[in-house]
Length: 308
Image 1 (tube, rainbow, N blue to C red):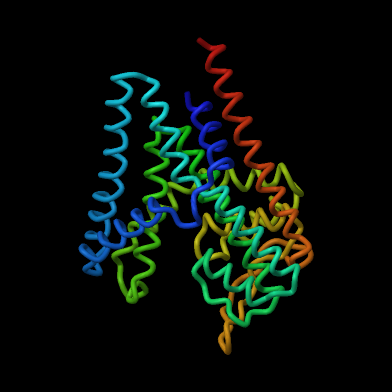
Image 2 (tube, one colour):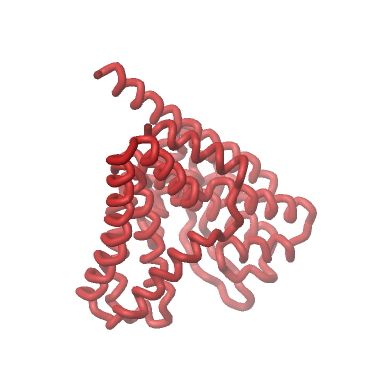
């Protein structure tokens, strides 16, 4: 049933894509922000309690619904799994945003590209040079593909029904809510959420890096992964970006200029600097990795049938 729920959700995403920020995304955002606001006392212990309450309650509720529906009829549980996956996948929405930015950059409309990129990642990009806009767009596309597609699919396969999907998305949103607090740098509250996210994303990030390497330049991807990933503040993101840059033969990371401020960042990947001409290659690699994931799930499903 997992394979068919996955295929159905992907088909629905292509035929009936949700708006860029769906009501489900807004609800998850509000839930996590509210929990952080209620429990944040700057202590690591309270951060652990809040994380366990939010992620545990959300995942447990989804498991209970799936269990009850399965007890009534397996088809109901199948529909529920496909619906949750459809609502929480971000593939088609991100594809549209990436294409809009690419077109704006190709038309030399940096202002429109900066606005669309802001709508997508929430960052401040007004006045940024075209090369920087293209580079940040590529980085965000790779991370969104991992966190919104590949990581979600991994946990969808590993845990029963849509439990893994909800757990993974809630964990990411809760960590983001902790980091968004004005005093996050001085607070230990988000420490447990950050550690938990690294644990949950450790295997999916490495599988994504392997998939990038297989689809792109294998040796360069592995080299960048081994030598550059640890330089990035968030380890799992560093693995995805370093391997993605190496696989594509593009340089990512590097300092960002925002007005009179320069944000220092390490260089990831190798080769030419990412620009608008390279963006179609990024989209193709994301699609190919998705096909690989679906094929692997299909092979595992067939192997399970044969084993029975």
